[in-house]
Structure formats: C-alpha cells, structure tokens
Length: 180
Image 1 (cartoon, rainbow, N blue to C red):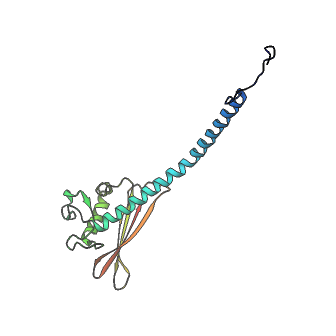
Image 2 (cartoon, helix red, strand yellow; image 1 turned 90 degrees about the horizontal axis):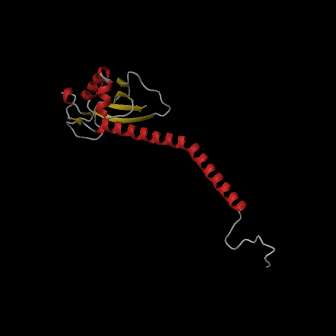
Image 3 (cartoon, rainbow, N blue to C red; image 1 turned 45 degrees about the vertical axis):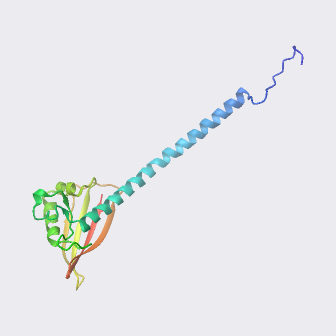
C-alpha cells in the first residue's frame, strides 16, 4: 500500500465506533426491559409472600389453641401468671381434646382485653376466633363463643382455618380462626 492512500481497514477483533454504539444501546435496552419486567412482577410476588405468611400464622395459631395447654398449663385458673394460652385439656394429655373451662376463660379475657389475648397468642396480625360447641348426639349447636378485635383492620389478604376438636363424650367443638 502506498503512503498516499491511507486505508481505513479494520484489523481483526476491532469494531467501529458505530458498531460499539449499537451494541451499547442494545445492552441498555435489554437491561431496561428486564428491569421493567422485574418492577411489574415485584408487587404480585410480595403479595404472595404476605399471603403465605398469613396462612402459616393462621395454622400455627389454630395448632396452638387446640393442641397446646398454654403456659402455665392451668392458665385459666390463675390468669395473672398467664404467658401463653392454649385450650388443650391438660388433665388428659390427648391430641385434639380441649377444655370447656379454658374456652369460657378465653371468652372472658377476649371481652375484657383483646390486646392481652393477642399478646398471649404471640400474633403480629389481628385475628378472630369463633368456637361453636355441638352436641355429639344431635349435631346441633349448644353454644357459640367469639373473640374478635375491637377495631378490626381491613386487608385484602386473610386466611380462615376450621378445625374440629373433642370436648367430652357428649360435645365436640368447631374452631374457626381467621387471621386478618
């Protein structure tokens, strides 16, 4: 090649500025699209996470009420020493057998101070408890106990758990717990 004619030849592995600019623009467009998709997906994902947390808490609270006697186990007798409530009948130590006297004490405490009950249950969220006692022979309801917050919060996500437990040979109970 002569010195008078300078060639604009590009060597191996080199690209022109225009090609570089196109590659950077395509990369930025890809990152922008990916970020936009992620931002649109995030609220739904966070909603699902909260839903799973509420559902897990609802099951834990129902398990605590039905199969835990509470602490101390005779909390219904000495309410001043209560650290955790549970409805399990401590005299028999049987799964899914609850005490009618503990249900009555829970009702009394709920009507007096829902905040104390929420604290004893260790719940972050508001909840409502409905316990219906049925006659085993007829299947008809004998009594209904409710524990609801004074000022319930309204949320789109809530979970309801329904469980059955025995009380004695003539009665059984349906516990319906809703975490709001």
